[in-house]
Length: 212
Image (cartoon, rainbow, N blue to C red; front, side, top):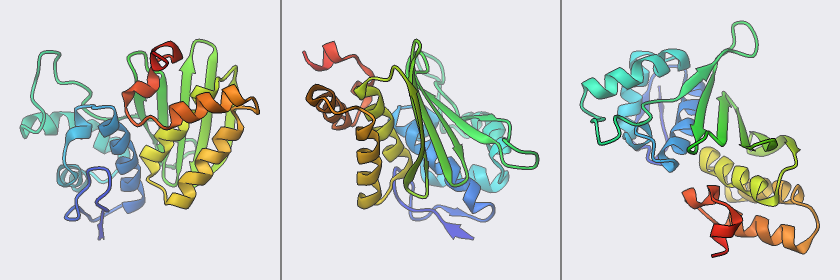
């Protein structure tokens, strides 16, 4: 039995009984969903734990959550429907392993997060341009990109911190590692710093709007 933390909307009273490592993936996905104002991200930590304790596996959680939340009255239909009712999941990377939770953010799915036990992969795409980073144990352990702008590295850095809720030292390490990918030009570093300082959905808009 384990108590979830009270970060990112989770409550001290959230208690999960099985597969705590996989439940931590749910919490990381939930923090991103809450940041993005997805319907399931606005549930309470107690509600998440209730669903998890009924079906303590990531694939089963993804299947049960939408209908369960609607039937319980936790999520109600609004002018644009029910909204995003839960994370998706992808096939395991190896036979017998856990699936990845998948959270997409943005009107066109510009941000795609894949979450495994102990690992978060976050990718930003805009046309051919992309930036991607992997965090494990509070550290950036992999990066990839093509034509990525400084603001793209800042975007994934900020959202990795949202998902992971690292210590201050770990957060600084994530920031510094991704800032190094922005290049050495003062204008590039200025753009990175400007975007990294943003904490809401405005982080996804273009520089012409941010500069306005």
